[in-house]
Length: 382
Image (cartoon, rainbow, N blue to C red; front, side, top):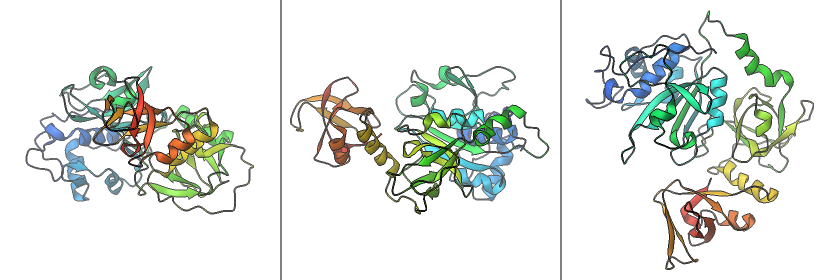
């Protein structure tokens, strides 16, 4: 692959005492510099040599920190060839493992945030994932003050806290970093990255998506800032993932695409259908969708139309209770934490219209297996 692992420790005496960015006096690389150190390993592994110390100074010179936190997009100010492709928070949702896998397969490691302690509360820590091995990831962990050498370090035994991978990873940052000048890219990587284009793997925006679909730099739908372009109904898109065809039409899946103007990013796969390269795109125009998480809303409509799909709702911040009847005065069957996934067990067509509306009731299956009622205003679409 294009990336060659280079290990740094945030505990190294050469830089551990330096303050990260514009942080407080105690915010040193040795204590809170895990993300910075991972980013230095990422760049160095792509032939752009940086240590945590040197990168810290360079990022400060371009305003690359908010206090002691990295402004992820600022890396492109130092290295214009390095592009931020995804910045996804998944504290309250499943991590996009398929996106991580696709990135790693293309030689692009992923920076991920974990909870480093089984104790109550969240103690965040960043590591760099650079390979998939069976049901786990190989990582570069900046915390130990030692070189990894050839020793493999797996993510799950160190940081999963007994949770599956999709719930262990709480934030994902992915960059696209081409090899440095003079670097050799193995032909196998070139073939994998270009296979979809050469074989003519395409998808078309469904006619039902009359508003068009967004192409985003990441799969976070809570903001419009990551929208790169909008493709109209009938538009032909090139699939850029080797397994992209398997995702087309699937609810809650995202696939990387390229439009006719060369914009590359992630598109909601449930708005797409298989297509041949010769298909004619629609002449209609699309504009970026302005509603929060519009893609998620349409996924539920797709689920209702197909009938064979399940609707999942997610409990909002603050948690919620599942009751025996459509009344807050009835008995409580379950107390659900924020981020809990609940299965809707009533006709989807009516359920979709109620999600997010306080005072309306949804019939759901709680995480303890009990069936009951939850205030629709306490949940959002999964």
